[in-house]
Length: 235
Image 1 (cartoon, rainbow, N blue to C red):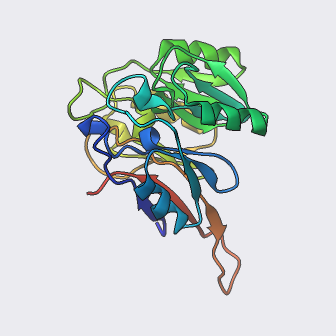
Image 2: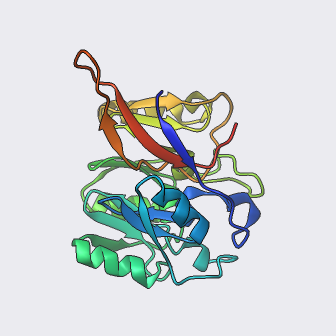
């Protein structure tokens, strides 16, 4: 697909099953900036032109510290549990004029699939209510259909991410989800195509977070583009 993937190395301060999850260790803001949890990650992304600041949180072994960067952005709205977020991230939101909408779910980024600025998918009823109240179209799914080793199940937001404006890539086969028909219909309604990266059930890999996108120079005009994305899937 001509996509460069920047993988997140494992951080032993997190629980082992999620120790290399991007949505736990990173949070990207506009302009190639954001926050991360460790120096190794900071150096790795600096080499790719992404400049991350380390947070002042050091113990990620348990909740709520482990979700100090776990916020989901849809347009100018941020959905997160404010009790979990690190102060640095809250301050960055205020400087950028973004509006924080509080939810009870600490793992908000894991729990939300931002389809576009007008639509989202989630299995969390509290998040679904908050998203809908904000005027965003939401598809509510039943929890329990996503695999995450070491846990009873994972989150739908951790299975996927945008690889183009109109393409949403899933770690696993979308047709293996029990509500695949509803998901595909909802994506089609919002002009987004589902891309299944591998066969098998959907897996919570910590999300695929888009970073940069650029048009490729070719002899003839084309729509070919390159996007940096990030996840921890290594197969």
